Image (tube, rainbow, N blue to C red; front, side, top):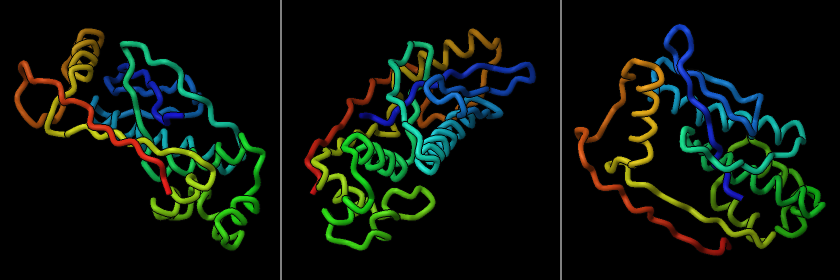
Length: 188
């Protein structure tokens, strides 16, 4: 499962940009402009996923994004903790089962899932590996402007009637879309 969720961004009456996640109704945030709202959205999504882990709740699969929505990703650590948490749930496994497979103390295994505790990405990858889960990582070059983001920004401008400030790495124009660079590999 990919932990990238569609978010709806809409201006409110005061001109702030409101962010809502249909898949996670408890996740609501805003920003003074589009750029700030997108940063706040990633943090809000991370917190919503962390809260579901702490509360022992199901983490829903992301729905298909509409063209007027933004795709938001949580922090990498929270995404891996959520993946590990859900992998254990779907296998009807406990933290003790994970600890036995990893040959570690129960408390160490519990820290891997706890979103309030720091975990090394390599440790999370090892835990997912013993559950035969595969980590796929995609990276977009920040110097390239994604054509979809430009289209969404134009749509936002036309809906709100104002131009939200956006930090760009180069001037607007006919930039080429950066090809997605993807690495796939079995975690070990």
